[in-house]
Image (cartoon, rainbow, N blue to C red; front, side, top):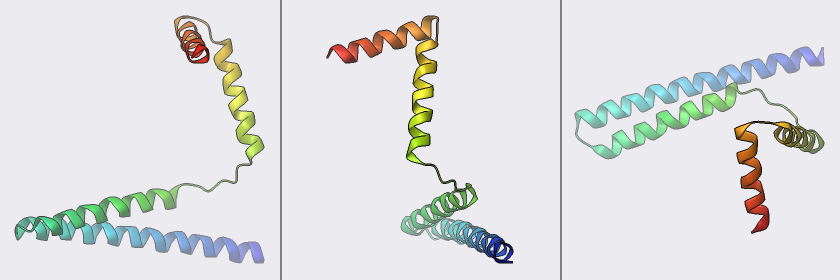
Length: 105
């Protein structure tokens, strides 16, 4: 029961945030249009900032939240480093030369 209620709350919370983002974009576009028609650049700039921030908030809301531990991040980093060391060819040699240059200095 608790998990069902919790999942419904999360969905409604996300829905409210998305509606808020849509309203922010619409109000921002309205400010941009009003600013352009009345030749007041400040209103247009405020509207543009509102549109960009509402879109950023929407992207942040849509992004799934994950709990990543520090151990998992360091393990992924060491795997990527091992893969880079195994790389062969021109790219691998160039990366190795660059790494040596930075290590020498």
